[in-house]
Length: 199
Image (cartoon, rainbow, N blue to C red; front, side, top):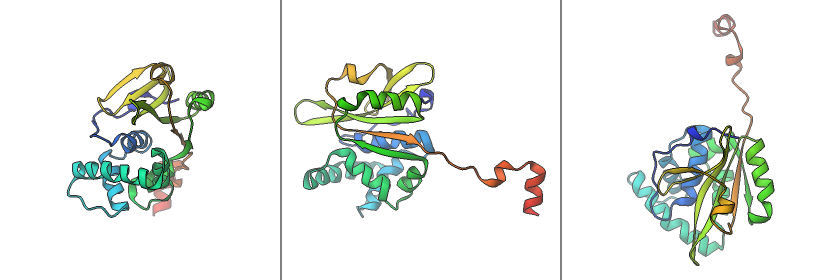
């Protein structure tokens, strides 16, 4: 379960950037990292030149589509590669805070997904078809008091309800589960102990 009020709603995606935008929304919840930094770090990872965050997001959209088709990947598979392997800050920090699990077919795993969202500190990115040739990624979660919700980076709207029941047959998804982070030793000490330790 998570707190829906902490989902960042001040960002609106550009065309074709929903997959990384959805991942960035999840990471922002767990880490506080800025959304646009993920597009900049994507470009750095692939050595794509850019002058600002807006341009990085536009170039991401073009490059991402090329990678999917040339390598015959599902969108979240490429995101998983970055999450697990990229040396860029946004992805390095993210993998320290949460685990990513790729689910190639969401419908048979619906009960598993809902249980994880309900019992763990977890969020989900999931794609739904739009027409016959494209799909769109949104973020799902289970709020502590209000139940299941979904968030769309196109319009910045957060709504309550189960996307499995609202948007037809989903495709792949990615489940993100918070990792336990050991606090710094100094934070466990009393003020007096901390002073002694630093003297």
